[in-house]
Amino acid sequence: MNESEGQSLFTRFSKATSSVAGRPVTFMLAVLVIVVWAVTGPLFKFSDTWQLVINTGTTIITFLMVFLIQNTQNRDALAVQLKLDELISSIKEARNEVIETENLGDKELQERHDEMISLAEHAKEDIEEIAVVAEDQSK
Image 1 (cartoon, rainbow, N blue to C red):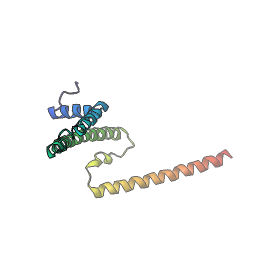
Image 2: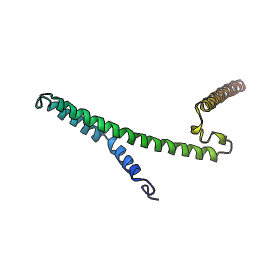
Image 3: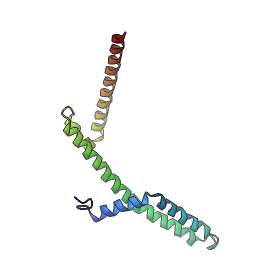
Image 4: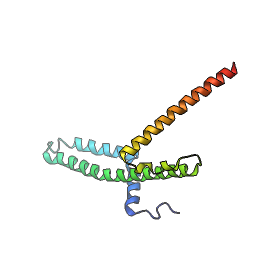
C-alpha cells in the first residue's frame, strides 16, 4: 500500500511540512531572515512598521506550526500505542487489560502506575535474592 493512500490532504501536508521544518537548512533560512530583518533596521529607522513585519510574520508562522506539530505528535503517539497494543496482545503472559491504558482517567492511570512500581520493586527484590543464592552456591 502506498504511504499516502488513505491519508487526508492535511495529513500529507502536515508530514511534508514537519519534514521540511525539521531540517538544518530551514533553520539557517530562518536565521538568515532574522539577520536580513535586523540589518534593514537602520534603513527603515527601526520604525514601528519594521518591527511589526517581524512580529506579525513570526506570530503567524508560530501559530500555524503549533497545529502541524500537534497533528504530527498525535499521529506518532497513536502509532506507538497501536504497536504497543499489538505487542501486548501477542504475548500470552501479558495482561491484556493494559491495552488502551492511555484512555483511562487520571485516577485509574495513577493506580496502574503505582501497581507497576510495586511490580518493579518485587522484581528487583527477586533478582537480588537470586543473586544472593547464586553467590552462595558458587562458594
